[in-house]
Structures are given as structure tokens and as C-alpha cells.
Image (cartoon, rainbow, N blue to C red; front, top):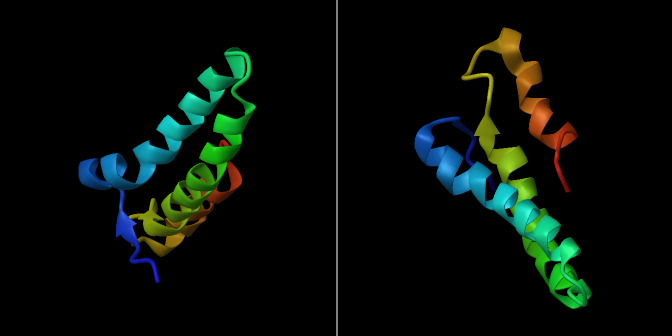
Length: 79
């Protein structure tokens, strides 16, 4: 079960930054030859962290009128 929290500096570094770093590392590995195995090994971690980030962050800050902002991480996921 995920606890929904608003976007703060702490939640940015603990929830949002890890999947972005995995995505960046995967993009760098694409440029290096013979790294397919590493990219496939990194994929489950990237997907699980992206799912956690999409489910845990409350980008609407509790306002009902801005609830549509919570769908952005799920739709615009870089993975």
C-alpha cells in the first residue's frame, strides 16, 4: 500500500529522482555497445520505481480541482 504525499524536496529526491536517474542511465547504456543485458537487468527496477513515483506523489496538493495533475506521472512516464 502506498502513502500519497505531496511533492516536496524530500519526496522529489526519494520518489521522483530515482526513476529519472534510471531512465538516464538506460539512455546512456543505449549508446554503449554490448549493454543489452545490463539494460534488461535495469528495466524491472526502473519500472517499479516509476510505478511507485506515479502512485505516491500527490501533485494536486490535496485540492480537488487540481486532481487531474495526479494523472500526469502515469501518462507521461518516460519508461
